[in-house]
Length: 77
Image (cartoon, rainbow, N blue to C red; front, side):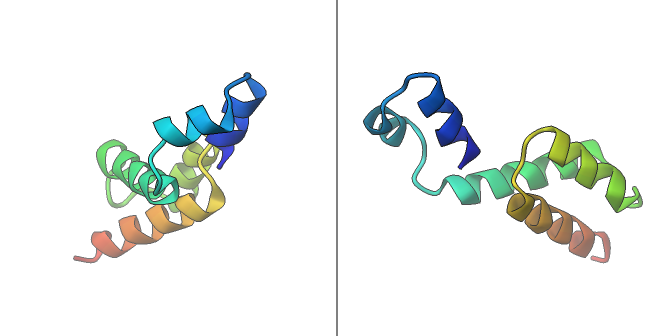
């Protein structure tokens, strides 16, 4: 949701934003966060390190929790 807010602050109309952004933006953000973890970090990396990285990149806490949990689960597979 931060993306929508930032676009509104930059002068884009809600209609334009709605047309351009995917409807399932939360799911898209969750998957993007997971993809970053999967591509950037090894499975034995300290979770605090990659959680802080995602916070600095501006991901929501909900997306970070989802990505970190999924990343940790796939570590055991």
